[in-house]
Each structure stands twice: as structure tokens, then as C-alpha cells.
Amino acid sequence: MNKPQQIGVTGGIGSGKSTVCQIFGTLGVPTYEADSRAKWLMSHDEDLIRAIKDQFGEESYADGELNRPFLSKTVFYDPEKVAFMNQLVHPRVGEDYKAWVQTHTEQPYVIREAAIMLEKGYHEYLDAVVNVAAPVEVRMTRVLLRDLHRDREQVEAIMEKQLSEEIRREQATHTVDNDGKRLLIPQVTRLHGIFAKGKTAG
Image 1 (tube, helix red, strand yellow):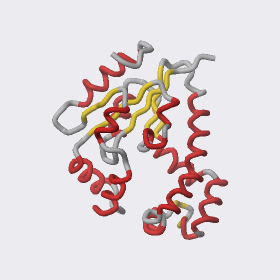
Image 2 (cartoon, helix red, strand yellow):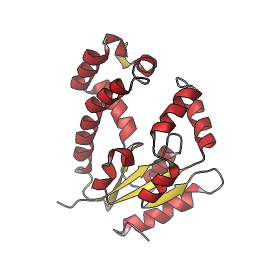
Image 3 (cartoon, helix red, strand yellow):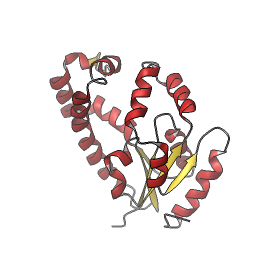
């Protein structure tokens, strides 16, 4: 069975990872968005739902849906709780991703999007990593407009826990600049041309 190249897409919160993945998607590239898939699993995987309720209380879910405001207040500011939540969710996402890759063996490459790819060492299992970069204030504005349940202090705390832009650029194979000044599509299509040929750099 053929195995497609696995390309990671990562970047700090609000950098525009999803937008870059959408462009890859329009080019016909299968894309696994780890953050979105984690949210789906937290709402549909019965074993995971029970584990979250057991650890954080029945209030973790409201009307059958994940109670994000509640979890943001009760989990986000407690490093131990965040670590425990990650221990529950990340292994399930990893298993889900591996199964997903096996459904795309006919493709030359697939995309895995994840915010904490470099921090957790997931990139070591990938063939190449694309870092999506944007200035801090641009990212802050995007997140506050997108995530109405977060405030500036929360976003700053998330940014502080993530790798610096300098380190991400050093560790990634490629960087796409999403600063609002440079066009995204030409940058992504150039990378598509590289990856579609079975290469990781060029």
C-alpha cells in the first residue's frame, strides 16, 4: 500500500493556518485539521465525552454540546487541568489521524494542520512542515474577531505558551507569510508544485 507524503501546516494562534489549508484544499489536497477534528471528537466520541465529564464535571457539556465558555474559565488558567485535557484528547486525535491517512493512499501528499505541532514534536513524523506567519497584532485582531468567548488576556496567554516566530521559522521546512501584504495563493501554489512532485524542498 502506498503511503502519501505527510506535510504539516502550523503557526501561532491567528496566523491563518485554516486559510492556507483551504487553499490547499481547493487544489485537491486532502487536509486534516487537528484542532477542528479534536473538537468533533470531543462532541462525538462517547468514551472521550465520558472521560471529560468524569474529570471536569457534567457542566463540561450543555444540551449535548461541549460547554466551551465553562471549560475556558475552569480549565484554561490551570496548567495541570490543561495538561490533563491534552492527555485525554491528543491520543484520540493521533489515532484518528493515522486512520484518516490510510484512506488517502492514492494521493501524492496530504496535509495535517495543528497549532502545537512543533511544540509537541509531531513534526518529527512528517515529511515537511509549513509555518504560517503573521505579526502579533494582526493575529490578535483575527482571534478576537473569531473567538468571541476569548478576551485579549486569554489570547496573550496562549501566545506566550507557543513558540516564538523565530523558532518556528527555524524549525519549519517552509514559511508562508500571511501578513496581509503578500498574496497567499501564489505562495501556496508554489509549495503545491513542490509537494505534488514528491519533493519536500525547492
